[in-house]
Length: 303
Image (tube, rainbow, N blue to C red; front, top):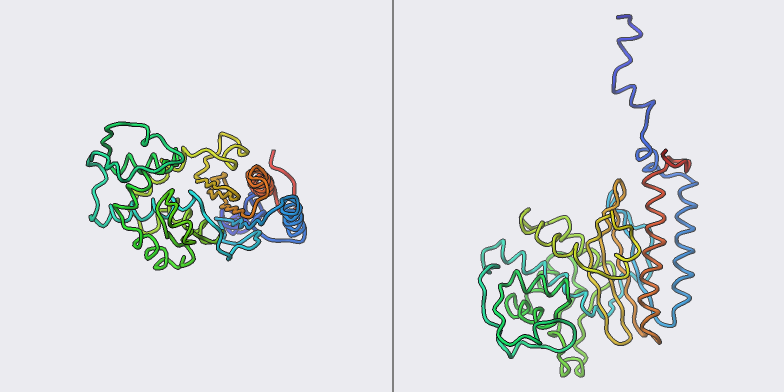
């Protein structure tokens, strides 16, 4: 072997053959312009809504916030509050203070109106694991109230504060009209709601088994974000809807470029406009990350 051949090591060779992902991760003026176009597109979507829209989009590889608007302001969560409730349930199961797999007859005092199937059943007996699945996948309000009673309302808020997500506040059970009249709305900012979703997805503070359970459940949730992402890509999400309010949070596990997104809307003149905005914002974010994931620094797409 010649001296010249000796110094051409695999490590040195790697400097000459960079993957598109490596190139994409290095910021440059062209990618900065692409990001600016994303922001402009999101601004146009927001302007089209007769209401208030907040959102945050995060690159989960770098942790960088790619785009945001009113991301630290508290919005009504509607059923999206069920993400931190699920986290608290799984955490308590890991701590050994709750058992997930013991079936218990439903206490009729926990029955709530709105979405779900449990209120239509006569004598159901389910485990907390089953209630968690119904809470997330069907957004069952009765199942949610069972879980809230099991973990304790104050415990959810306290856990979120402990995790640095103090603007997440669980202040009422589902369909509690008296609490609504008092102004006890469940709240979160887009940034904190997304972070709670990321904690579940990554399993931070949870055992691998509980993380996997949370992922399995959230993978089955449908919504505006799931509907616009190609079906081959895993989406872990939760939706929320009330009159005048639409909210959604999701982790989009795009190969080479996973990203998180939370969109929250309120004061909507038309509820459909909120759902439409969530889908359009998610579509714009997906388009951006899909190109970043499959392109070199100068924008050439991988063959």
